[in-house]
Length: 313
Image (tube, rainbow, N blue to C red; front, side, top):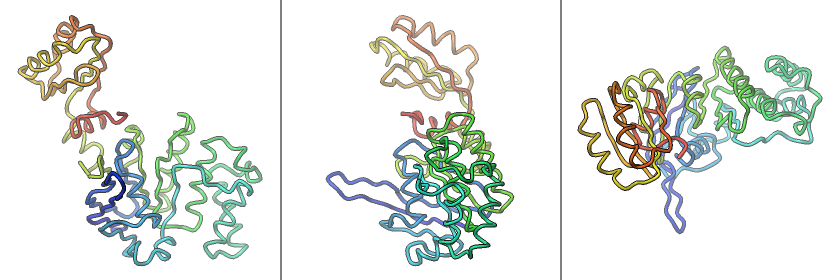
């Protein structure tokens, strides 16, 4: 295993004690793209921060290619590349110089660093922008430069923290292509995301994480088969009076896995949804039906099944 995370825990002791990471165990195979899927505040970024030596754990271990990141942080850093949530490109350097000087920092000679920088500019379709400064780049282009820079020293593992946050759809697709291209180089990728489509499209395997715990682990198709073979009906109501009674009645129906009230109305999870929709509309109509969303089996339904709440809540 190229990445081994064992019983990882991070507790912040302040006025309010916060358990950001709660005994996580993960193992990554060499060359795979592994996703950490969860909402904001789930513990994804803290896990990445510990694995990349930026934060010390309260307990537990992280090993990169057998190197303990706490005991030997300098050696671990040579094995990893990191793209954080925010743009960290040096604004006083051109695109080419950002990559070139990253190579020099990791011990490359001038000629070797120049060759590597030019090759990466071509690989990430950035050659025409080699002399442009970061402030002149779009968000998508800047993210591609960050990925190119992060793998310039040929790390064995790349950590991407919310890589498509803030990107428009076109830039997000280009970023996905760039990440997919890393497979050819044999780089193991661990990415955090709260975008279900991103996790589903990129991840060979993924872990669903919430409140610092791993709730499920496996290939996207496995997780959908194991947990997500249900349809979710989210109902928004003008009045909540009588919603409990509707939920109780729906629970008795064949094919309904659960029916609960929510702050906005009702949420019904059904294994078999045939004939349920008209009955649900009829039952909700007296309470003022404002909206109804149907979520077909997906990673979102997996998450809802495991946590009872939406990824965006």
